Image (cartoon, rainbow, N blue to C red; front, side, top):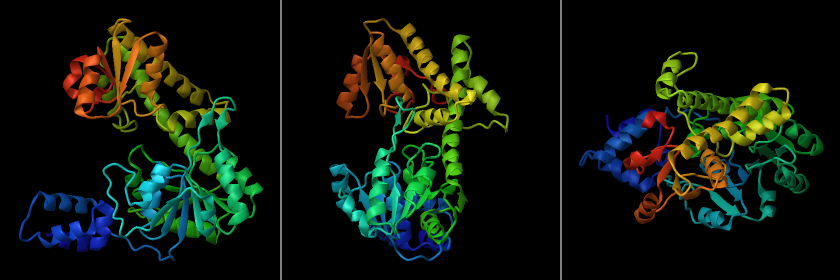
Length: 430
């Protein structure tokens, strides 16, 4: 079957395929047209990608909207790109570099090419442009503040206040993670607004894929009505798998988010506990974990030990849940376990090198990473710590030469050649 036949059989136009695969429409047309004359690896690659696409489902018709998205980050940007296939999207962000790239049609996601001719996207730092939006999605990061034991939601409240005064007819969707009970209080105070809490469940660096193929769409609402039903259709229309929205109360939706991330953090912590036990008793953690995970109730997935759970969500969400649910000894144990894991890893590293050694951390990613926790412990003990995130071959080679011991939470192709001087707990890729 030709690419053209496969495409039509799946129910897609050439434009649909170009958008979904992130390639220019003219490039796709050229490959499809030349298929009979010159079948190449590009054709095979496209065939495989089209095979993986679900059948194009008939979507509910709804007029184009102007959608404002506050925050062009890991959550807001992928959602905005996909929404712009059917709607006009306006990003509001304080980062002028991001704004410039968006307005010039440059993708903010590595290895994802925008079909800028078919997408209707603009960006601005001017809050006043929100008055032209039919609906507004808030996708701002919320940091956990240790001093007050809760997320900092001040920016969300500022934007909601502005919308309430200047565009009260807009439907507001909060994607940011918030404390338990926050949305209900917000909706009660700004009673003239239709406010929805719809948590995101994206994996890091998989924003487009996970937004298109969600496991679920959750809507926390005061009551189900035409406005939030309409918004549900707008978000359902960007998915490939016909996900239907589950409506519930604000508090239930907030609990889904916090308990989901805390459960995943608990699973990571549990696998790390097994690995710490194995290190202490000179056992093969890989064999223990694989033997245990053959039980179908446990499952052979999400079970590769690490230096701890990190990233944007897990550490702060588990802390917020513990703050809201202090009676839970289990949630507290997950938080404590992650702290202990960093200490155990640092202890293992200190056994392998002297105080005058240089310890090189490979791909720490961000300040919230588990690797950074380990690096901080070593630095505080007086060890010389250096970092490499990304760069050309010369800077990478200099990093390798300077490092007496390499620390990698995950092994990739670039560092795999230096395994003899790498410390990792990435058991399944060794």
